Amino acid sequence: MCLGQAIALPETGKSQERSNMGAFLSDLAVMLYFVAAGTLMLYGLNCYVLIFLFTRSRAGAAAQRRRILAGIGDIDAREDLPRVTTQIAVYNEVNVAERVIRAACRMRYPRGRHEIQVLDDSTDETCGIVDRTATAMRAEGFDVTVIRRPRRTGFKAGALAAGLEAAKGELLAVFDADFVPPEDYLLRTVPFFMADDRLALVQARWGHLNRSRSLLTRAQSIGIDGHFMVEQAARNWNGLYMNFNGTAGVWRRSAIADGGGWAWDTLTEDMDLSYRVQFAGWRTMFLPELVVPAEIPEDVNAFKSQQFRWAKGSMQTAVKLLPRLMRQPVPLFKKIQALFHMTHYLVHPMMLAMAVLALPVLVVLEMGAGPLLFGAVAFALVLSMTAPSALYMVSQRAAYPDWYRRVLFLPFLVVLGVGIAVSNTRAVVEALVGRESPFIRTPKRGDREIKRYRTALPGLAFLEILLGGYCLFSLSVYLNAGKYLIGPFLAIYAAGFLYVGILTLTHRLGWEG
Image (cartoon, rainbow, N blue to C red):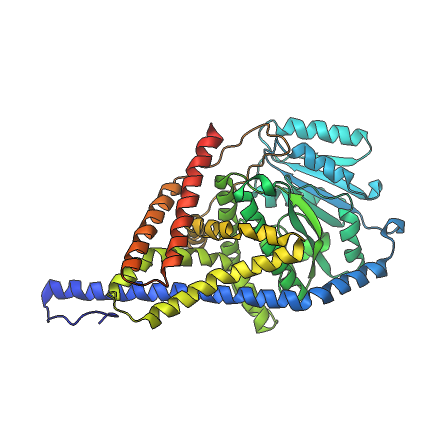
C-alpha cells in the first residue's frame, strides 16, 4: 500500500494490475522526491563545510604565501627566472583577440625568457586580426608566435597540446581570449614555482570586466566569486583536490607530462588534467589576491551554453576519474570532498525532480499528511537553498569592501540557478549515458562590439516556460491545501523557470535582430 493510500475493496484481473502499477508509481514518485530533497540537503551541508574550511585557514594561508615570497626576494633582480610560454587559445574571437594579445605582451617579464603563443583555430576574420597584431608586437620586440592547425582536433585541449609541443618555456601561462592579465601577473605567480619544485599549478582568481551591465551579469559575478573566493580557497588551503579553471593559471610543463598530458575525452579538460596531476603527487596553489578580469556572458543563451559545457564536462570527469580517486592513498574526507566537487552539478536534476514531483507527491499523500513530513521536506529545501547563499555572502564580504551592496543581487542568482536546471539536467544525463557533443565556445563582445556571434536555438526555453507555469499551478494547489511551508520554494522554482525561459527567447530575438 502506498503512502497515504486509502483502503480499497479487493480487485481482480487487469484492474488489480492497474492498481498495483499505480501504487508502484506513487511509491516511486514519493521515493524520488525525498531522495532529491536529501541529496540537495547533503550538497547544502557541504557548503557550510567549505565555509568553515575557508574561514579557519584564510589567515594561515595568507601568511604562508607571504613567507614564500619573502624567501624568493626581489623578483625583478633575479637572473635565474624560468622561461615562460604564454598560451592564448583563440577560436573566432573577432571582438577580443587583439586585446588579449596586447595584454599578454604588456606583462612584465624578461623578453628573452617570455614567449607568447596564439593558438588560433579561427575560421573567420579573427585570423587577420591575430596576424596583424602579432606582426605589430613582434616589431616592438616581443616573441609572438601564431600556431594554426589544419584540423581542430580536440578543440581547446588539442590546441594546448599542439602548442605544448612547440613551446620553449618550462612554465606555461594559459589564458582564454576574453581575459586581460595584469602587467605583474607573471611576477606574482612565477616565484611560487621557484620556491617549490613539486608545484604543478598556480591559479589566479577571475575578475569581471562587465559585471555592471545587467542583472544577469551581476548575478553571475556573485556565483563566480563564490566558487573562487570560498570553494577554491577552502580546497587548496586545506590539502584537498583543486581544479584548474581553464584560464588565468600557470602550469609546470613537467607536471602536465607526468599527469598524462592534455586530453579531450571530456568537455572540462582543465578539471580532468588537474586531478590526474594531483593523483601523480603534484601540488597546486590558489592566489585569491591576484585577480585577472574577464568577460561574463551578457546573453543568457551564451551563459546556458557555458553552464552546459561545465556541467557535462564535470560529470564526464567524474565518470572517468572516480574509480582512480577511490584507489588514491588519501584520507576519506579528501575523497568525499572530491566527490562533491566533481558531481556538484547533480543539484540541477535534483531541483528539477523536486519541481516536477511536488504536485504528484501531494496528491499521493492525499493532502492529509501531517505538518511533520512537509516540515522535514521544507527543512531540507531551506538548507539546500540558504547554504549556497551563505557561501556567496561570505565570498562577497571577503573580496569586496562594498559587499553589502553586491549581495542585494543574490536573489537573482538563486532564481537564475533554478532556471538553468533544465539545460544542466540535460548536460548531466548526456554525460552519464556517454553521449558526445562538441565543445561550444562562449561568444564575447569585447570592449566594442564588432561582430555578433550566434548561439544555438533555444528549444528548451519553451519547456522552461511550461515548467514555470506548472510550478505556479502546483503552488496554488499547495496553498489551497494549507501546505504553506513548501509554497515559497515552488514560487522560487516558478520564478526561475519563467525568468530563464522568457529571457532566453528575448535574448535570442535581440541577438539575432
